[in-house]
Amino acid sequence: SPYRGRATDGTDIGCDFTALWAAIGGTTPTPTPTPAPTPTPTPEEGWTFCANENQRCSFTGTRRVRYGAAGRYNFGTFTGGVDCANTVFGDPLGGVVKRCEYGEAIEQPTPTPTPVPTPTPAPTPTPVPTPTPVPTPTPAPLLAPPLIAAAHVNATTLASRTAISEPQVAVLITNIQQAQTMFAAESSRYQAAATIDTHLRSALLFARAAGSLALDGRKLGSIQNRLQTCTSRLGQARNMLQVGAGTALGESAHAPNTVATAVIGPAATLSPASRAPRLASGSLGTISGDPNVSPLAATSNAATEVVADALPIELAGATVTIGRWVAPLLYVSPERIAFVVPAGLPSGETEVIVTSQEGYVSRGTTMISAVAPGLFTTAGGAAIVFNATGGNAAVGFDVMSPQTLGYQRTRLQLFATGISANAALNTYPGNDITLESGRVANFAEAVSMQARTSDGRTLSLPVEFAGANSRLAGADQVCVVLVEALRGAGTVELTLFIGGQRGNTATVNIR
Image (cartoon, rainbow, N blue to C red; front, side, top):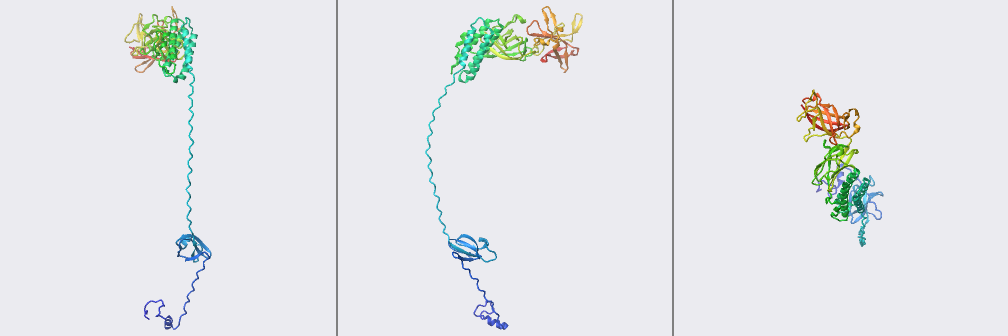
């Protein structure tokens, strides 16, 4: 054989396997029969075989493909072919060789495009009707003008009378207050509201001053003068009540001496001793004003007699009203007034009004208390004091003072105010003092004097007398005894206490 010594599969023409086996073994082997091929099953109608398992099933177009055997299939739709394998279809029947078959081509319909809806045209907007203009409301009628006019008429009538009582003036005061209240509610409707308000307040203060003078009853001319000024201020306010009005000065004819424009100045009211804004009925008081704005009085003037019953209620054309009462006056000037607080005033904040015949007015307030103790001092705080035992000392006081028959304890007399007006504090009449002019109440049992030394010691000094000074209305005096412990103390602070109230501190020098 030409293929001797070479590998061969026994199919070449040069090799006779029958002769070969006979030569080798002497027998011829029975040949293994070639198995008959498994017939490819006939596909069902509508299906075409395309591949066995793990082969490629090829076709054109898009077809529905089934994968399986013996009536168990998994289905899918593919385009151009598909691998016939479990990895694509899953295993519909385990342990069996499966195949793929495809069906008729599936026409992929071209989707009908969704028609674009024709937009609904926006409706033509209904035109907004032109609003009917709201008519401007007619403003409510002004109520202040008739009230001010009525007060003006009342003041004019009252000022012309030759007999004027406090109740008549009280009606006028009520009229003005009602007009003020209504004007305040309507003030936004006037360009000159601030000026009108000042005229109304000034008119009210002059009416109150007239009322206190009428209550006293001694000064008809002064009552008429205050009412004339009140009338003038009401007339000015009345003329300015026209909407948009500027100024109105034509009413000053009611009071010839009245200043043309209403101005209300300050009236700071204090105790002249303690300098505190607290006064007691019957005590001394002082008022400070601003002469450049509203002088308290036209000129400086002092009372010729300073005892209580002789004091005037008007000096240099000026009067002082505290609460409902006129105050007795000691001294007046354009910037300061010294007066005595009227007796019987209720405790609490009280209005203070200073008016003049020239038409000036100042106003303030102060507190009224049952007691308001205060020691008079110099500008440096030293007490206004003298040795009541004997001998005057300008530099200091000794604990003992010489007398005709030897020495005795020094008694200091200090000037004060705010002590003697409260009779209820005189709880021990047995120590009162009897004089030819009458009995003088001694409030020593209600008064204490504390002495504090520069080294911090506090001592209580015996009080022998505390009461009114009969020579000056509103003034008090306190007499204390110096104790031995004060010898050589130098500057000592004295503080007055009465009725639970603490006064100011004054200093004395003890040698």
